[in-house]
Each structure stands twice: as structure tokens, then as C-alpha cells.
Length: 211
Image (tube, rainbow, N blue to C red; front, side, top):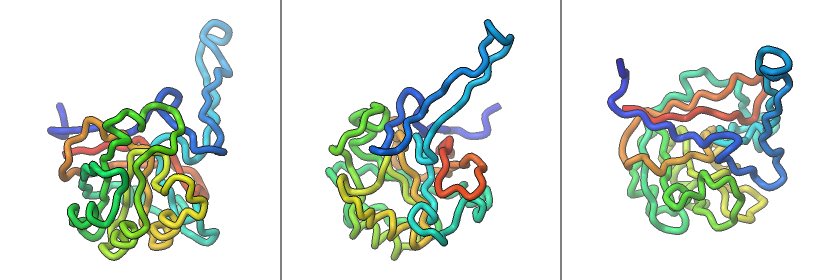
């Protein structure tokens, strides 16, 4: 029995499709026990809190910002809209066309997904990002979460991270490294439950869209 008429897994696969942000620890899975030697398999995982599809929380940039402990599980289940953007960056016009509702999630499907970059597992500076003016409008529209289909939402090479700071400073969650290649634009429910990690500034998620 299916609970939903449509369900899209929009997460990248750790160990095969994920891209590491430059300087972040790479994901690795190492066997600590094997079937042959121990009669069971146990693996050790090593990864950044920002590995693969993940949520950024305010503490990522603000020492006194909210951490994972400060959110309820229900905060990660939201009405969402997927918007397709054809331009090489996400600007004000894309946000205006999306007409996001207060308290909702807005997910941007870009060439990152349609070109395969989102699942290529390679860092590239030729990706679609969100510009600061668009982020300011998202704050004005009081969205709850913004999602993008690459490992960072920020303009390539901008080490000041103004988009992160603006959104997270207004308690707008950032969902990065989505794969929206197979998702038609439209309205959904987003479920992006993170691992329950104490004091976390970010956490990997298994993100799905349903309706």
C-alpha cells in the first residue's frame, strides 16, 4: 500500500554521487568487521556534517545561533515548491516568479541537476548559485527553508558567504546538494529529517518530496 501518489528521493548517494566542498573532510566508509572474518559486517563512517544532501543551521555561521537540538522533527517537514530556473544564477526574477508563501520551502531546480553536476561527485566552480538580492527577497517573503541542487548555495569563490549569513541570520534553513533532475516543478511536501546529532551546526538528511 502506497501512502503517496508521488514520491521523489532528492538526495545524493554518499560514497558515489556526493561532492565535497573544498577543505571539508571527504566521506569514507571503512569495514571494521567483515562477514568472512567476524560473521557480520560493521562499517565505520567518516564524514563532514555537510556531506551529501544536508541542512545548514544558524550555528554554521553564528556561534550563538540555533543548533539541531533547538529544532523539533516537525520543523523539517514543510510545504514546498520546486521551481525550475534556466539562467546561470538564481536572481530576484526567479524568486518573484515563484511567489513563495511565508513558512514554506522553496527548492531551486537548475542546470546543476539537469546537467548531472549535482551527482557527478566532483567540485566545479561552474555551478548555479543564489545571488544576494534574491536572498534578501526570500527573507522579505519569510520563507522557512531554501534548497539548491549543489553542495553550496553561495556564489563561487565568495569566501565571505553573504547568502549563508543573511538566510541563516534570519533562521531560514538551507538545504544543499539536492538532486532534482527527475522532479517536475510544482507543489509538494518536503521531508528532510536530519540525523539526530547533539549540538550540530549541520547534518546530512534523506530528503524526499511527496504529494
